[in-house]
Length: 358
Image (cartoon, rainbow, N blue to C red; front, side, top):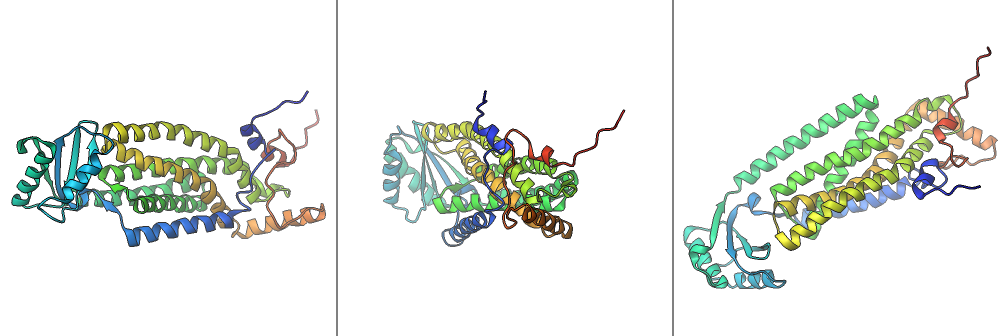
Protein backbone atom coordinates (compact mmCIF):
# COMPACT_ATOMS: atom_id res chain seq x y z
CA UNK A 1 0.00 0.00 0.00
CA UNK A 2 1.59 3.26 -1.10
CA UNK A 3 1.60 6.27 1.12
CA UNK A 4 1.08 9.71 -0.39
CA UNK A 5 3.07 12.54 1.10
CA UNK A 6 2.63 16.28 0.83
CA UNK A 7 4.78 18.67 -1.14
CA UNK A 8 6.86 19.68 1.90
CA UNK A 9 7.75 16.05 2.69
CA UNK A 10 8.69 15.38 -0.93
CA UNK A 11 11.02 18.39 -0.94
CA UNK A 12 12.55 17.28 2.37
CA UNK A 13 13.23 13.71 1.28
CA UNK A 14 14.45 14.75 -2.15
CA UNK A 15 11.71 13.09 -4.20
CA UNK A 16 11.37 16.47 -5.89
CA UNK A 17 13.80 19.36 -5.74
CA UNK A 18 15.04 22.45 -7.51
CA UNK A 19 18.67 22.92 -8.45
CA UNK A 20 19.35 26.24 -6.69
CA UNK A 21 23.11 25.77 -6.84
CA UNK A 22 23.14 24.63 -10.46
CA UNK A 23 21.11 27.67 -11.56
CA UNK A 24 23.07 30.16 -9.46
CA UNK A 25 24.24 32.15 -12.50
CA UNK A 26 20.65 32.85 -13.48
CA UNK A 27 19.74 34.05 -9.99
CA UNK A 28 22.94 36.07 -9.69
CA UNK A 29 22.10 37.78 -12.97
CA UNK A 30 18.51 38.35 -11.89
CA UNK A 31 19.67 39.84 -8.57
CA UNK A 32 22.28 41.98 -10.33
CA UNK A 33 19.59 43.48 -12.54
CA UNK A 34 17.41 44.22 -9.51
CA UNK A 35 20.36 45.82 -7.69
CA UNK A 36 21.20 47.94 -10.75
CA UNK A 37 17.62 49.19 -10.94
CA UNK A 38 17.66 49.98 -7.22
CA UNK A 39 20.93 51.92 -7.47
CA UNK A 40 19.64 53.88 -10.46
CA UNK A 41 16.38 54.63 -8.64
CA UNK A 42 18.23 55.95 -5.59
CA UNK A 43 20.77 57.85 -7.69
CA UNK A 44 18.42 59.55 -10.15
CA UNK A 45 15.03 59.59 -8.45
CA UNK A 46 16.19 59.70 -4.86
CA UNK A 47 14.37 58.91 -1.64
CA UNK A 48 11.26 60.79 -0.56
CA UNK A 49 12.39 61.97 2.87
CA UNK A 50 9.81 62.63 5.54
CA UNK A 51 9.57 65.87 7.44
CA UNK A 52 11.71 64.49 10.27
CA UNK A 53 14.71 64.28 7.92
CA UNK A 54 14.26 67.40 5.80
CA UNK A 55 12.59 69.66 8.38
CA UNK A 56 9.38 71.58 7.88
CA UNK A 57 6.02 72.42 9.38
CA UNK A 58 3.32 69.91 10.24
CA UNK A 59 -0.34 71.00 10.18
CA UNK A 60 -3.31 68.93 11.37
CA UNK A 61 -6.98 69.75 11.05
CA UNK A 62 -10.25 67.95 11.72
CA UNK A 63 -11.92 67.11 8.39
CA UNK A 64 -14.24 64.28 7.31
CA UNK A 65 -12.19 61.94 5.11
CA UNK A 66 -13.54 60.25 1.99
CA UNK A 67 -11.83 58.52 -0.91
CA UNK A 68 -11.22 61.83 -2.67
CA UNK A 69 -10.41 64.06 0.32
CA UNK A 70 -6.62 63.75 0.14
CA UNK A 71 -6.50 64.58 -3.57
CA UNK A 72 -8.90 67.50 -3.13
CA UNK A 73 -6.89 68.95 -0.24
CA UNK A 74 -3.64 68.51 -2.16
CA UNK A 75 -5.08 70.42 -5.14
CA UNK A 76 -6.33 73.27 -2.93
CA UNK A 77 -3.01 73.52 -1.06
CA UNK A 78 -1.25 73.95 -4.41
CA UNK A 79 -3.32 77.10 -4.90
CA UNK A 80 -2.38 78.73 -1.59
CA UNK A 81 -0.89 82.20 -1.58
CA UNK A 82 2.41 80.85 -0.21
CA UNK A 83 4.09 79.05 -3.11
CA UNK A 84 6.52 76.14 -3.36
CA UNK A 85 5.29 74.52 -0.16
CA UNK A 86 6.35 71.04 -1.22
CA UNK A 87 3.24 69.87 0.61
CA UNK A 88 2.50 66.25 1.43
CA UNK A 89 -1.07 65.40 2.43
CA UNK A 90 -2.08 62.36 4.52
CA UNK A 91 -5.31 61.20 6.04
CA UNK A 92 -5.44 60.48 9.77
CA UNK A 93 -8.19 57.93 10.04
CA UNK A 94 -11.60 59.14 8.93
CA UNK A 95 -11.77 62.46 10.75
CA UNK A 96 -8.54 64.40 10.24
CA UNK A 97 -5.95 65.42 7.66
CA UNK A 98 -2.22 66.09 8.03
CA UNK A 99 -0.42 68.56 5.76
CA UNK A 100 3.37 68.71 5.86
CA UNK A 101 5.24 71.56 4.18
CA UNK A 102 8.75 72.95 3.95
CA UNK A 103 10.08 75.07 6.80
CA UNK A 104 8.01 78.27 7.03
CA UNK A 105 8.74 81.64 8.58
CA UNK A 106 6.16 83.08 11.05
CA UNK A 107 4.30 85.08 8.39
CA UNK A 108 4.05 82.09 6.04
CA UNK A 109 2.88 79.89 8.91
CA UNK A 110 0.03 82.27 9.73
CA UNK A 111 -0.96 82.49 6.06
CA UNK A 112 -0.96 78.72 5.51
CA UNK A 113 -2.77 78.09 8.80
CA UNK A 114 -5.50 80.55 7.85
CA UNK A 115 -5.85 78.98 4.39
CA UNK A 116 -6.14 75.48 5.84
CA UNK A 117 -8.79 76.71 8.30
CA UNK A 118 -10.80 78.18 5.44
CA UNK A 119 -10.39 74.94 3.50
CA UNK A 120 -11.72 72.87 6.41
CA UNK A 121 -14.33 75.49 7.38
CA UNK A 122 -12.96 75.84 10.91
CA UNK A 123 -11.26 78.60 12.93
CA UNK A 124 -7.49 79.10 12.53
CA UNK A 125 -7.08 78.21 16.19
CA UNK A 126 -8.47 74.75 15.42
CA UNK A 127 -5.57 74.07 13.05
CA UNK A 128 -2.65 72.72 15.06
CA UNK A 129 0.89 73.00 13.76
CA UNK A 130 4.41 71.99 14.77
CA UNK A 131 7.71 73.27 13.42
CA UNK A 132 10.15 70.38 13.01
CA UNK A 133 13.89 70.80 12.51
CA UNK A 134 16.01 68.47 10.42
CA UNK A 135 18.54 67.93 13.23
CA UNK A 136 16.49 65.16 14.84
CA UNK A 137 16.34 63.23 11.58
CA UNK A 138 20.10 63.63 11.19
CA UNK A 139 20.61 62.16 14.66
CA UNK A 140 18.35 59.23 13.77
CA UNK A 141 20.32 58.61 10.57
CA UNK A 142 23.64 58.75 12.38
CA UNK A 143 22.50 56.37 15.11
CA UNK A 144 21.04 54.02 12.49
CA UNK A 145 24.37 53.87 10.64
CA UNK A 146 26.18 53.12 13.88
CA UNK A 147 23.66 50.41 14.75
CA UNK A 148 23.98 48.91 11.25
CA UNK A 149 27.80 48.85 11.44
CA UNK A 150 27.81 47.22 14.88
CA UNK A 151 25.14 44.73 13.79
CA UNK A 152 27.09 43.61 10.71
CA UNK A 153 30.31 43.30 12.70
CA UNK A 154 28.59 41.18 15.36
CA UNK A 155 26.93 39.05 12.69
CA UNK A 156 30.25 38.23 11.07
CA UNK A 157 31.88 37.37 14.39
CA UNK A 158 28.99 35.34 15.83
CA UNK A 159 28.21 33.35 12.67
CA UNK A 160 31.90 32.67 12.14
CA UNK A 161 32.22 31.50 15.75
CA UNK A 162 29.03 29.42 15.74
CA UNK A 163 29.61 27.64 12.43
CA UNK A 164 33.42 27.78 12.53
CA UNK A 165 33.29 28.96 8.93
CA UNK A 166 34.13 32.51 7.83
CA UNK A 167 32.63 31.83 4.40
CA UNK A 168 29.19 31.50 5.98
CA UNK A 169 29.74 34.86 7.69
CA UNK A 170 30.66 36.51 4.40
CA UNK A 171 27.74 34.95 2.51
CA UNK A 172 25.29 36.01 5.23
CA UNK A 173 26.57 39.60 5.27
CA UNK A 174 26.39 39.85 1.47
CA UNK A 175 22.78 38.62 1.63
CA UNK A 176 22.04 41.26 4.28
CA UNK A 177 23.57 43.98 2.11
CA UNK A 178 21.45 42.74 -0.80
CA UNK A 179 18.30 42.99 1.32
CA UNK A 180 19.18 46.49 2.49
CA UNK A 181 19.90 47.82 -1.00
CA UNK A 182 16.80 46.26 -2.56
CA UNK A 183 14.50 47.52 0.20
CA UNK A 184 15.87 51.07 -0.10
CA UNK A 185 15.67 50.83 -3.89
CA UNK A 186 12.01 49.80 -3.76
CA UNK A 187 11.28 52.82 -1.55
CA UNK A 188 12.98 55.10 -4.07
CA UNK A 189 11.38 53.44 -7.09
CA UNK A 190 7.79 53.52 -5.81
CA UNK A 191 8.15 56.78 -3.90
CA UNK A 192 7.39 55.61 -0.37
CA UNK A 193 8.13 58.26 2.27
CA UNK A 194 11.13 57.53 4.48
CA UNK A 195 10.51 58.30 8.15
CA UNK A 196 12.27 57.35 11.40
CA UNK A 197 9.79 54.48 11.68
CA UNK A 198 11.00 53.28 8.28
CA UNK A 199 14.58 53.20 9.59
CA UNK A 200 13.44 51.11 12.56
CA UNK A 201 11.61 48.73 10.24
CA UNK A 202 14.64 48.34 7.93
CA UNK A 203 16.91 47.52 10.87
CA UNK A 204 14.35 44.99 12.09
CA UNK A 205 14.17 43.11 8.78
CA UNK A 206 17.92 42.57 8.86
CA UNK A 207 17.42 40.35 11.88
CA UNK A 208 14.60 38.49 10.14
CA UNK A 209 16.70 37.96 7.01
CA UNK A 210 19.60 36.72 9.11
CA UNK A 211 17.31 34.22 10.85
CA UNK A 212 16.27 32.70 7.52
CA UNK A 213 19.89 32.43 6.40
CA UNK A 214 21.04 30.86 9.67
CA UNK A 215 18.31 28.21 9.43
CA UNK A 216 19.59 27.18 6.00
CA UNK A 217 23.25 27.27 7.10
CA UNK A 218 22.49 25.14 10.15
CA UNK A 219 21.07 22.47 7.85
CA UNK A 220 24.12 22.87 5.59
CA UNK A 221 26.41 22.22 8.54
CA UNK A 222 24.43 19.11 9.44
CA UNK A 223 24.51 17.66 5.93
CA UNK A 224 28.13 18.54 5.11
CA UNK A 225 29.62 17.08 8.28
CA UNK A 226 32.15 14.51 7.10
CA UNK A 227 31.54 15.42 3.45
CA UNK A 228 35.06 14.33 2.42
CA UNK A 229 34.58 10.84 3.91
CA UNK A 230 32.42 9.78 0.97
CA UNK A 231 32.72 10.11 -2.80
CA UNK A 232 29.11 10.14 -3.98
CA UNK A 233 28.08 13.73 -3.40
CA UNK A 234 29.79 17.11 -3.60
CA UNK A 235 29.55 20.03 -1.21
CA UNK A 236 27.22 21.74 -3.67
CA UNK A 237 24.92 18.69 -3.68
CA UNK A 238 24.56 18.83 0.07
CA UNK A 239 24.00 22.59 0.18
CA UNK A 240 21.35 22.27 -2.51
CA UNK A 241 19.61 19.54 -0.53
CA UNK A 242 19.77 21.73 2.60
CA UNK A 243 18.05 24.58 0.74
CA UNK A 244 15.35 22.24 -0.58
CA UNK A 245 14.74 20.76 2.87
CA UNK A 246 14.44 24.18 4.54
CA UNK A 247 12.72 26.01 1.69
CA UNK A 248 9.19 25.01 2.65
CA UNK A 249 9.88 25.95 6.26
CA UNK A 250 11.24 29.34 5.18
CA UNK A 251 8.24 29.98 2.94
CA UNK A 252 5.78 28.94 5.64
CA UNK A 253 7.51 31.17 8.19
CA UNK A 254 7.49 34.09 5.78
CA UNK A 255 3.83 33.67 4.87
CA UNK A 256 2.80 33.40 8.52
CA UNK A 257 4.82 36.54 9.31
CA UNK A 258 3.55 38.46 6.28
CA UNK A 259 -0.12 37.89 7.08
CA UNK A 260 -0.24 39.98 10.29
CA UNK A 261 2.20 42.55 8.89
CA UNK A 262 0.07 42.87 5.75
CA UNK A 263 -3.06 43.18 7.87
CA UNK A 264 -1.46 45.95 9.92
CA UNK A 265 -0.36 47.67 6.72
CA UNK A 266 -3.82 47.55 5.16
CA UNK A 267 -5.66 48.53 8.32
CA UNK A 268 -3.13 51.25 9.06
CA UNK A 269 -3.39 52.70 5.56
CA UNK A 270 -7.15 52.50 5.05
CA UNK A 271 -8.48 53.12 8.56
CA UNK A 272 -5.80 54.95 10.51
CA UNK A 273 -4.02 56.79 7.73
CA UNK A 274 -0.28 57.22 7.32
CA UNK A 275 1.60 56.97 10.58
CA UNK A 276 4.28 55.18 12.52
CA UNK A 277 2.45 51.85 12.40
CA UNK A 278 2.07 52.00 8.64
CA UNK A 279 5.68 53.04 8.07
CA UNK A 280 7.10 50.19 10.15
CA UNK A 281 4.78 47.57 8.66
CA UNK A 282 5.58 48.72 5.11
CA UNK A 283 9.33 48.32 5.69
CA UNK A 284 8.77 44.92 7.30
CA UNK A 285 6.51 43.73 4.48
CA UNK A 286 9.01 44.64 1.76
CA UNK A 287 12.02 43.42 3.74
CA UNK A 288 10.55 40.02 4.66
CA UNK A 289 9.91 39.17 1.03
CA UNK A 290 13.40 40.28 0.00
CA UNK A 291 14.99 38.47 2.97
CA UNK A 292 13.32 35.17 2.13
CA UNK A 293 14.49 35.48 -1.48
CA UNK A 294 18.09 36.20 -0.53
CA UNK A 295 18.37 33.34 1.98
CA UNK A 296 17.33 30.85 -0.71
CA UNK A 297 18.75 32.25 -3.95
CA UNK A 298 21.75 34.33 -2.82
CA UNK A 299 23.33 33.19 0.44
CA UNK A 300 23.51 29.43 -0.16
CA UNK A 301 24.77 29.44 -3.79
CA UNK A 302 27.30 32.10 -2.74
CA UNK A 303 28.47 29.84 0.07
CA UNK A 304 29.06 27.02 -2.43
CA UNK A 305 31.00 29.36 -4.72
CA UNK A 306 33.26 30.44 -1.84
CA UNK A 307 33.71 26.90 -0.52
CA UNK A 308 34.64 25.50 -3.93
CA UNK A 309 37.66 27.78 -3.99
CA UNK A 310 39.28 25.60 -1.32
CA UNK A 311 41.83 23.10 -2.59
CA UNK A 312 40.33 20.26 -0.53
CA UNK A 313 36.84 20.93 -1.89
CA UNK A 314 38.13 21.06 -5.48
CA UNK A 315 39.93 17.77 -4.95
CA UNK A 316 36.82 16.16 -3.48
CA UNK A 317 34.65 17.40 -6.35
CA UNK A 318 37.11 15.84 -8.81
CA UNK A 319 36.90 12.53 -6.96
CA UNK A 320 33.08 12.63 -7.12
CA UNK A 321 33.23 13.56 -10.80
CA UNK A 322 35.54 10.63 -11.61
CA UNK A 323 33.24 8.21 -9.79
CA UNK A 324 30.20 9.51 -11.66
CA UNK A 325 32.00 9.15 -14.97
CA UNK A 326 33.02 5.65 -14.02
CA UNK A 327 29.41 4.85 -13.10
CA UNK A 328 28.16 6.27 -16.38
CA UNK A 329 26.82 9.53 -14.92
CA UNK A 330 27.57 13.11 -15.92
CA UNK A 331 30.05 15.19 -13.94
CA UNK A 332 29.28 18.63 -15.31
CA UNK A 333 26.23 19.43 -13.22
CA UNK A 334 25.09 19.30 -9.61
CA UNK A 335 22.83 16.45 -8.62
CA UNK A 336 19.88 17.72 -6.67
CA UNK A 337 18.08 14.81 -5.06
CA UNK A 338 18.75 11.60 -3.18
CA UNK A 339 18.30 8.43 -5.17
CA UNK A 340 15.71 6.76 -2.97
CA UNK A 341 12.47 8.43 -1.85
CA UNK A 342 11.96 8.58 1.87
CA UNK A 343 15.65 8.33 2.76
CA UNK A 344 17.65 11.33 3.85
CA UNK A 345 20.62 12.01 1.64
CA UNK A 346 22.94 12.85 4.53
CA UNK A 347 22.41 9.52 6.29
CA UNK A 348 22.62 7.55 3.04
CA UNK A 349 25.85 9.26 2.07
CA UNK A 350 27.73 8.59 5.29
CA UNK A 351 30.30 5.76 5.31
CA UNK A 352 28.94 2.52 6.73
CA UNK A 353 30.45 1.22 9.93
CA UNK A 354 31.13 -2.44 10.40
CA UNK A 355 29.21 -4.03 13.21
CA UNK A 356 31.38 -5.38 15.96
CA UNK A 357 31.26 -9.14 16.42
CA UNK A 358 30.19 -10.41 19.78
